Structure formats: C-alpha cells, structure tokens
Length: 129
Image 1 (cartoon, rainbow, N blue to C red):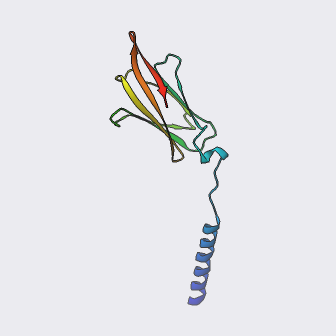
Image 2: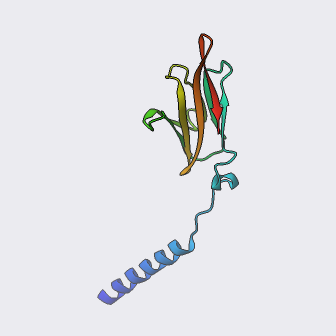
Image 3: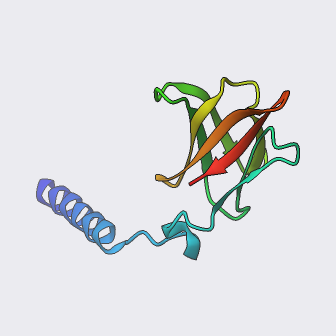
C-alpha cells in the first residue's frame, strides 16, 4: 500500500513537471512582444500638456510616471482597460524645464521628454525624443 501511494505521488509529480516544461508562454497579441506602436504621445489641443494613448487590445495595464530633471517622481498613474487606455496630463502647472514621461506596458518601457516653457504670458508644453 505504501509503495503504491509513493508510486502514484511520483507519477503525479513527474507528469506535472513534464507538463510545465512543455508549456511555453506565447504572446497574447502579436504586438505584445514590442511596445512600439502600442503607446502614442501627443500634445493636447491647448498645448498645455500631453495625451498618452495605449492601444485598446493591449493586455494588462500601463503605468505612467513623470519625472522632473532630478529624476524625482512628479506624478504616477495607472491606465487600465476598465478606465480607458488614454489620458491627458496637464503639465503647464509645473516649473519650466524638461520632464521625462515613462510608460511601462508588459514590463517594457517607452520614454518621451516634455519641455515646459513660457511663450509670452502663457506656459506651453512640447514633446521631444
């Protein structure tokens, strides 16, 4: 009886190991292997901020982090399918200078530089890189 229990447990363990070794992870979507084309950055119409859009069929969520010139986190946000995968960030309230916008999707990162500056009496934002 003891030997049959040990043998059953051994076969179960070996079967699980073989199944786990044979199962390979495949990308959910052909574009999921690369972040290119998943995330777009564009200035909002008033040119006071940046709109970030992530493709609708992108699995999971996107993490948006905005850093100042000293690499301090200014803003951190999560975009998910439930809330919509696009959002505008008004940056004209920040001090003049360059800010790094980092978007992480599926453990891949894409970065853009937002430049905040005065033009006349108003503050504007442009995108670089």
